[in-house]
Amino acid sequence: MQKSTAIVLTHGMLDTMNAKTCHGLLRGTERFDIKAVIDYKFVGQDAGEVMDGRPLNIPIYATVQDYLTDGNERPKYYVVGVALEGGLLPDDFREELLAGMEQRISVVCGLHTLLSEDVEFKTKATHYGVTLTDVRKPRKFNELAFWTGEIYKVKTPKIAVLGMDCAVGKRTTCRFLMEACQAQGIKAEMIYTGQTGWMQGYKHGFIFDSTLNDFISGEIERSIVDADRAENPDLILIEGQSSLRNPSGPCGVEFLISGNVKGVVLQHKPARTYFDDNEVWGKIPPLADEIKLIKLYGAKVLAVTLNEGGLSEQEMIEYQLDKENELGIPVVRPLSEGMDRVVQEVKAFGNFGNV
Image (cartoon, rainbow, N blue to C red; front, top):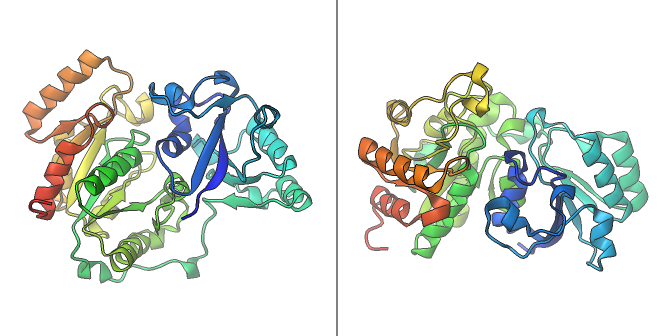
């Protein structure tokens, strides 16, 4: 896939979990060549430094106009880099995107707000000769696959990266695991299930939360079967969504049952006590209980991976050691130590021998 130049809009949210779409693109994408982040709160800083303290040499500007005035080449796309509750486009984002369109920059949006159905955006797009790509635009039912049982013909090992909650880093860990497996000679293919995964350029997948419920199982099956036939991989990794018990959107059983997935890497953020940090939604269950629940669905948790946000280095080390002793499986901090220990579990699960 040839990359297209792009800038990413976070508009004051780059240091929050709302900017997880931008964070994913900064950590790697085969679809876009990210030239800058547009965020008035962090002007002049490096986007990687703001995200996780690791410089990426990607500058931050206040507006698209400032970016262009600084002598930068006009990008092909302006990407909405946030995921917001309810998926609505804020008014200040709207104004900035329209300013980009006036500079003849096309827009890519992963929110539920459909720009291609907005009168003002449609008019501007026609006038300036640009495109509007709504990644989450629902596909019609006759374009979707219904579950057939074809999944049982797939013999390639499959592992889902599930989470204890939403927005804890499942997609990022899945990508890290894919890259680590590939580095050790395992041909791993990743199935995307969200808008950021599409933006990162994975070949196979679908947008889970904009798919008619009757076809969720079929789209999981289709994505896996297509990837298996087209890529002939050694391993298929599936990006999870939300969590098994988040009341605002329980999800994950579909991957285990409809996708016939038998291996799980479980992502957790120890600093978070309540689902989505909301006491009303209830407490996140203990890891041991979640592992037992996953086992009831016929799958095995190979390792736990940790999101380190909100805890000190010492707190993370103590938590990690405590949980390893309790659970008897690797508990890994992907950003701090990489994924090699998880890959060892993957090798054993997939019977990859000395690969």
